[in-house]
Length: 419
Image 1 (cartoon, rainbow, N blue to C red):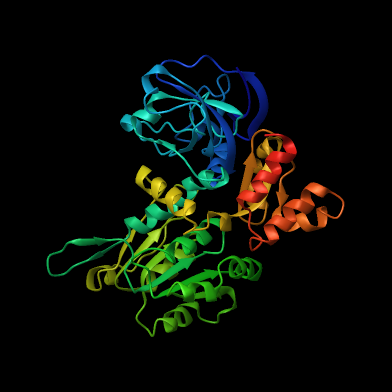
Image 2 (tube, one colour; image 1 turned 90 degrees about the vertical axis):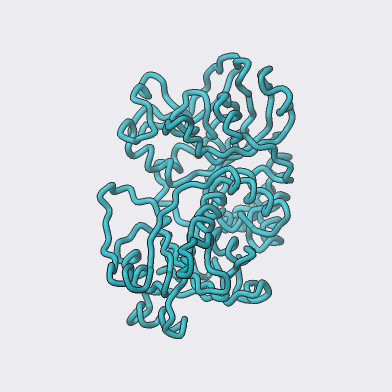
């Protein structure tokens, strides 16, 4: 059958094309992709082309389909998987395969398997690894956002603290501790805040830094300090650019004790070094941000490592358990992945948005595959709605949901475009 997809042929070379998919094999599954959100990792892929570790060397003749944060419907199931999956089921996907040591991953490595497509073919290793998940949620976009949320959840689970009596590591962030999210008013940071307010071992205080008042104001709108209080957490947003001495002022918030858990969400040397300096005794810093420079370095205080047991880890991606947790929490409205989304578009806007991603303000760019629509900021819906009935409906829906994208708005789009 025919599919329409955004394919990468090389560095900065993305093309929206229609082509024929091969018939699926007995160990493959054909799916209809409904939604796909754009990840900064895809931008890094496109900027590196063949130099990227996950990209095949023959992409100039056998281009790959980009996109790995996607969800949709199962269309056809090969006989090997007929007992586990049925046509018509909604699906979510864990793209971090790590199959037999291979770096191959959807959106990076496969000719017929990626999210920026109307239809694609899921290869057998995905099912073998348990990375294709049945999804029963109401909206597709929350399943798409399950992947970035799983990365955030994986970071929380990977942090650890030590026990001097027996040296056992207690996994996760410290219960009742001070938690700092640096560069935390972007899409992933807000996801981290949303998750941090709902976990069992939640901190007593969650401090979120940024250098943009606009981003901080939006963060307050979607996750307010009062909402956090209701969850039993003191939430503090801070613009560190306005501080005379960020170290002293951030440390003072903790009465000089420091932060038990620090997440660094921006790949900036000074931020990482500040985070290291703010660690409490046995504090854990998670360098979550992925730098594009493979020589990215920062100074750490090894005196503190030795005497006060500070430690640094890094996480990238999540596992299937993290994705299951993300989808479950979203379906129960315990977390709000929608806090990450600021722009909506159709399949025709993916290539341009990906190539220009760092220059487009806001958070996640969410795209739908089965219609064309310019990439549009949610905050612009109201103005556009003065002349366009569709945007009027979308604006009203988002306003009734704290300015956030939501399942009702998704259905409005589907009804309008006949999806």
